[in-house]
Image (cartoon, rainbow, N blue to C red):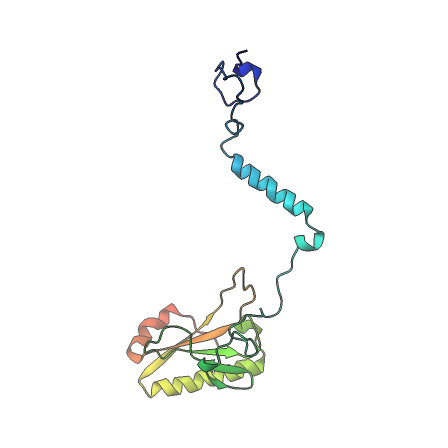
Length: 184
């Protein structure tokens, strides 16, 4: 018996192409070009529908992650980099390669995501640290650039804010200041 395309519902073969006795047409050839994308969407939809309602809608974590590098009570904190601890903030050296750098970090002790969330006491202590660092670097004929690093990610949606303090030569300060906005 000789099979042809009309005997089979698959679009895998051109019209009237003969099939060898005992074989079946390829089941994949009839798929549309975006079959894989459609299949993935259907698969995701099925997984979502099969999950309990509580698992479908997760609220972002509100507290500090257990592995926060900047929380003093975290096992991830690197205490040897901390140079000064106040009542509301601390001063630390940045992690990284051992090169002659003078950058420092000012970090609130409480896990806060940005300076907008700081209490007055924290703001005052951070301002005091900045003023003392300005005095210190002025003796070396340097000024400082202060900026906040805020970078939430999927793994850390609630980051621990910190200020980066980078000293620069006073002669370069006027060239750099137009790139930064000043905020008190």
